[in-house]
Image (cartoon, rainbow, N blue to C red; front, top):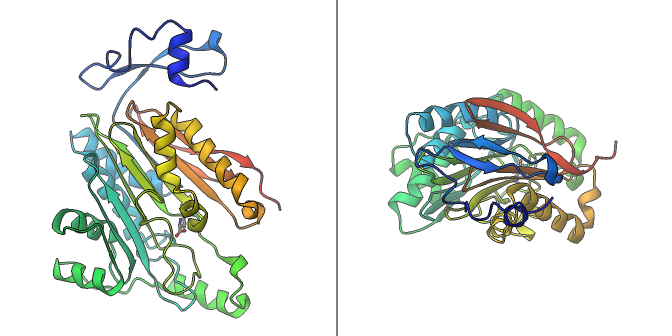
Length: 338
Ligand code: ASP
């Protein structure tokens, strides 16, 4: 695949320029990138766009879209979007109903970032159903970016959040079953279902949110990529946004979401940027071949173009644009071993 700049140059469309190609309403004529120059065509694209990880992204996108279609901000949209799986007991990887760590505690990580580069984050937070809203409050009400553990809990309680038991019967039973069989084998760390959600609003501003209960059966106290700005999620309103899911340790090692945004800054399309980041993991982390290893990235750029790519098959993402909310299969590097 060629990058957009290269394509515009080759097809003689460079004179249109990215900015000139967009009308003020946000509707835009975008060049569809294809490997085959002959087949490429100008296609009507539009903003807003919402993209999020996994199947539970569909319901999250709905909530985000409601805000965006009423001229709301991307920041409100990403927060309200991810609150949906946070409150859903059937989503066992985020918020209420999340699978616990190996000692039976549900510990939550989340972060949020707006179009001005403001960001907030909480990690190892317990007993609060909506860590994303606590993260937003850290961003808006403190001079800090990240609060963790008991400090984050005290901050949440002081700001009106309620203390709740987040360990549902279903998740407790799964944990008890795991405890019997596991022998604390680190190979059996499960997860991969964090919600990362990116949005661009009608004004053309980008924001992102990421929230998770982390890998199931993790060490007590373990924090993954999801609350780390630049690892689990990153936004640069000049360029684009990215979010990650899967084995947090692998994402942290390459500063995954920051890397994807920087690749877009250097002219890569969102799709190419996600693919290059996955290739970086594959090249430097030979354990990518392990059965339980997975990492997936999603990306959205300033023009509303998107990308998604994962190490293994099975990663899905939800895309809402042109009034349509779809669950799509991501392209991937390698088929998982059975
Ligand atoms: N990235 C998350 C973590 O490592 C896990 C996931 O995506 O489910 O905590």
